[in-house]
Length: 101
Image 1 (cartoon, one colour):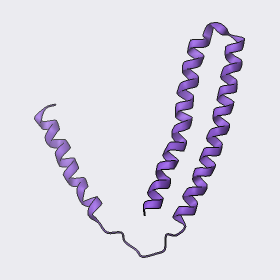
Image 2 (cartoon, one colour):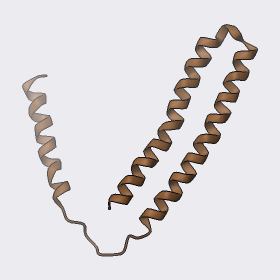
Image 3 (cartoon, one colour):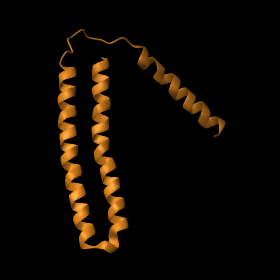
C-alpha cells in the first residue's frame, strides 16, 4: 500500500470519528423499536424458510431431471441459500442494534 493511499484512509477515518461522538438528539420515545424489530425478525425468518424450502425443492427436482448438471445446480443452490440466509442474519443484527438503543 502506498503512502498516499495510507494517508487517504487515515484522513477518512479521522473525518468519520466525530459521527460516533455525537449525543442522540430529540428526546422522543423510541419504545416501538424493540417490538418492531421482533416482528421484522419473525417475518424475515418465516420468509427465509419459505424461500429456502422452495429453492431446495426446485434444486432436487432439477437434479432428478438432469443428473449431469448436478455440480452446477448444487453450486447455484448453495449460493442461493447463502443469499437467502443473509437476509435473516442482517435482520438479526438489526434486532440486536434496536435492543441496544
